[in-house]
Image (tube, rainbow, N blue to C red; front, top):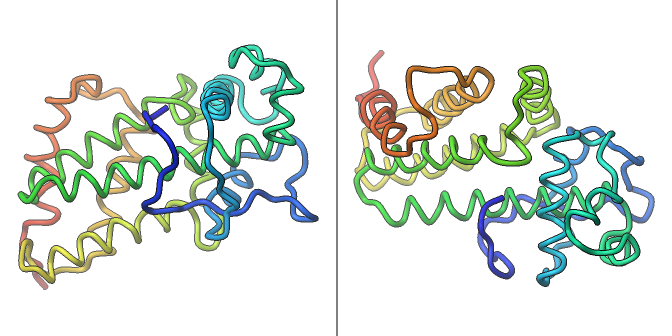
Length: 238
């Protein structure tokens, strides 16, 4: 879980929890939870320390057990709260997962934007963004030792209109477009560039065995500078 103190106020990929007739069924599959978390009208609220502890526990259990096998009993135990406390704050397991996923995704997009603002060199921006993404997929709820579970999660991210992957690609493409307009990188097709970068990340996620030590941030950044930055810095050709 990425460190988050208080309510985030930058990019909000979340949507309203599915309540009042729109609630997902109990033990909703990940694709439905992600779709709900990405909705633009997500009913976000300020989270206190107990909310955050419950959501962090929920993310850990979700990563280990999946949506159907995870239970609020186990989540409450790990969060060191009673089930009644958990359900007062999050009426159902699905609503808890929606809030936890929306908070996690918001943190990722916010950190991405902060990294872009902190570095003016496009090579360093690519290196830092790639290192962030590799770090994210090695943590709950994305990290899992099972190749089948990793492939299932990628499939869940690819569903929807637009899908979470498409939303992420468009977010990255917009950042690339702005850089090109400023003359910081050669003009090209931002959506294709973003798509290429995302598919590299997906490849490392689905098949993490690699000569690159993904646990070494410096090595990951060096790989990105050498092999991924040309996606942005090479002039477009016919």
